[in-house]
Image (cartoon, rainbow, N blue to C red; front, side):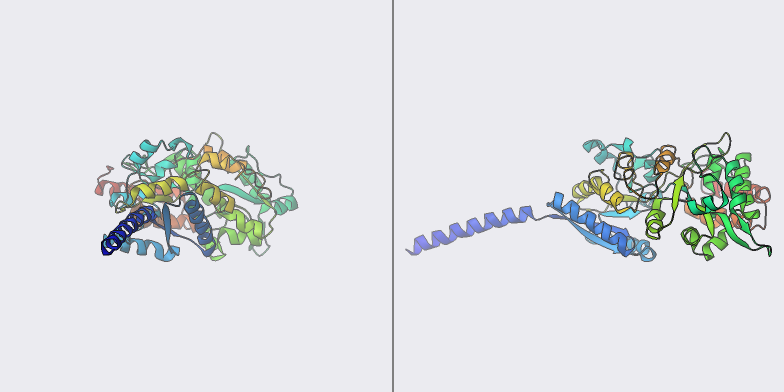
Length: 431
């Protein structure tokens, strides 16, 4: 009897171990997901994570969320630890080239090739924003291209026809003259345009100009070339004529969203992020493509923060499953687009009813599509030293132009000399 009882115990123990192994084998793999954002954005991200886990119960998504002000410092600290158990497997980052150069990101080319992921669905030039040294290191979630927002009530008030695809810079100036209101005291009570000065490259690109001769491997500054100087003169001229708010005044007045909602400006040039706020405020507005000069080109910015995979990750296959789902029309792209928070990075998503079929303002969502189909790399350099070059040399040198203290032709040649010297010092050529 004792022998039978011992045998039974051993059999039960063996069954328990086998079943335990099966259960253990079915435990989900944990993928840590890092991003910044507001409480509202966090709610959308959480919805995305829940939808993925429902579709992929074999993978558990663990969220690491920080506000913008703390995010990059926090993630740098985690990378410095070198501990895969605390470093996020998937992280939202920009600019990609800086982090790829530091070796903290995993190149995605082998995963793209193995799974047949469709790279061609991204807007023109957008995937290049997430590349470094010829390799793909991330998938942009959205595209930050700008369109022209306009207040229909103000246009109706002064009798100006709404902007359309045929508008040129001359049309914009003609409308701006009528839309601007200057009091007898000289105080401007309404400007035609509110636009951040940092978007100057939009005008430069439209006029067939550029910041550098190559935004990947530059050899010289091109801001002093005639095309760029003319574009700067156009934009600064709008400020000098009181058609456009000066950059410092725009910032102090609450940014482009604030002045547009208050009626201090009739138009702004901005990306899709303003749609939700303007709709909630009940504004009577629409959007159009940004006017271009005669003989110019559309030059929307092909840029956007991207989902990336950590080179430290111990769960790269699971991380790729999540990353590729995030960047699919049936997955994350659909949820983010329905939230109204983004213009999706994938053309198939943007050209579907998820974006174009939304009722209400703006009615002319096709403007985003037109700009996206002509998007270009050009606003930011795609090399590691760009942030230093832009932040310490280019942007400070342009401030006198935006303040009305100097003309472009007096600033840009000397600026290019400084840029060329920086490029030469960092091994990019130059004189």
